[in-house]
Length: 488
Ligand code: AMP
Ligand code: ZN
Image 1: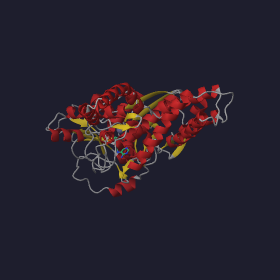
Image 2 (image 1 turned 30 degrees about the vertical axis):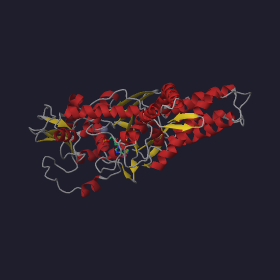
Image 3 (image 1 turned 120 degrees about the vertical axis):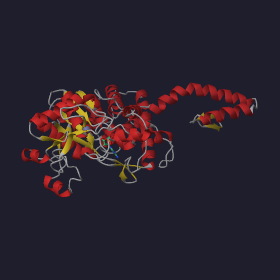
């Protein structure tokens, strides 16, 4: 296993290259992922990013690293234009629904946790909120001001991008050039607090009617969205840490600004490996709440949506997400989900078969190299689809052994059982959720169907139909066949 730890390569968005992963502190990894802004239900696109990083976290842990995984909750400061203009997204929702902002935050945080739990995501080790770290954010603004990279204006504090760019390349992550950025900005749009259009808010003054606001050295206000991630990652992972992740759409301006803030406050670039997950698309377009081109996980699990013809189990959806590398886009279609469902069932059946295989003298295939291929796939920038393909090579072999067309030795059987289960359950996070709920229901259903059978024998059609209709209402379909009744 240690050779795979040594061989882990990560694509670093900052350098545009796959690099050998070397953590700052041997054996430990600091991982920060931008969390959701909790003003609406998370859609499947959001979930893809969080599932991608869950698999990354799981594999690092599987390799034996001790990972501190921090993922924030954005509960203030994210404005509707994703920059310095407009209302706070949460405050706006609170105003529309006539609720307290913290009621909005609470309700969508609960939803977020529920959905990620349905997808079998492991919770982060620390889940800090922006409102819980106002003091740290104020301290960071002070540090940036002290270093001369920010200025105060009318109770707000702005980051001075051009000043920073004199000594550090602003745009290094997103590949943007400051001259191009400048030529693309029009005037100041009436934002006369700013000295220059590229400057961004570290702290904003709040008007009287503003709901979420705190005292600061610059007056009553609230922190900028980019600042919270810098303040919280520094607090829990240090001035420089190993991996920072998020969706591709956060590269600019959010992550670019994080680099500028961290570098100017702490004197070093905050992150060693920047990782960005690609988008989930629907009808070929980015899944996004604001354009209405989105599906909620609940709509998919219940089958109640316009896009899919049936309901899908969360584990099938998770398995579907593994069909594309995290840096590629993934298109959400009914056909792809149906194919994923077949693949998922086949994989879970093979895992059950693997537990019952009989060992022989020797193996007819090289099981160690099969297992090595699992590690190789994931150590090559977390290539889950290649891992899945390699797992299906193992499935083929398992089924051949079952059919007495191949053999496996005792040691190899133990190795394959450990690593197949490890990669499917611990690394991909795929569990036999469908089976386990059906397993629990099975004895109850045997009893109910026995009672129905008795009613039928007694020609008590009323009771028999009542049982069938009652089960249908609970989503269970009973089929009567030659060999008795079955259910689904
Ligand atoms: P937000 O709450 O808007 O900040 O988004 C939370 C996370 O979801 C961010 O990391 C986004 O990059 C990510 N995200 C948003 N839309 C998609 C999508 N269609 N596919 C994948 N990730 C997305
Ligand atoms: Zn962030």
